Length: 253
Picture (cartoon, rainbow, N blue to C red):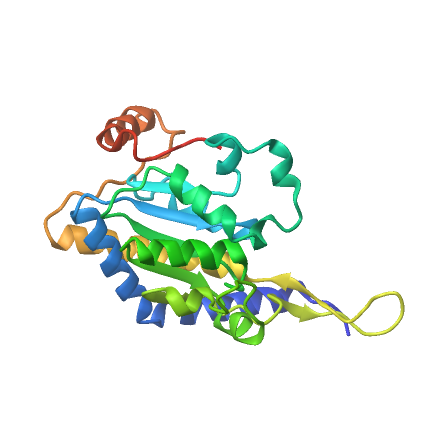
């Protein structure tokens, strides 16, 4: 068997064509619209590679200004945990970290949460989702139904992210995430390459933002959207909008 990059591209192209048909995208955009029109902020969290999707939501050129990214490193940046905590291989599996991240965040009652996790089973993700729902927030999950359904929860409750979310956006990644199988035998153990979850999860995030902006425009609202900081008028435009959410959105590391 020969690894063919074109096959990976074709697989992604098929997903790009079909994912926009998911009706859950409109439901998620409805929650985005509800939060923004009510003065809320979109709080996005992802650990590992899922943090890239949280970055796609929060502080992105062409994206929404009232957005905030939560991350594992917040326990050091905004809390008093030693930096060595971030070197723990099992940090994202520790449920106790979730409460610290949430308590350090500038969260208001009307804020909406988006939690991104391909498996949706690790302790931090499930505990954060649990706390978010206990505190009365709407919750959107971006996850892989296939992978989540094939593995056990690592949370003491036995629950998974998909069990707690109000809306589940399926990134359509297979179990194990990668889609191009390597040949068996020789020095190469049977496995696969070509992970898709970051690509498809980012697509879902952008589709939700696009539908949200459409909703706001149809309601006669002016969407609070970022310009690129690398165009001449970008900084002035962005700083003016960010000032409306002073103390509620963080644009640090």
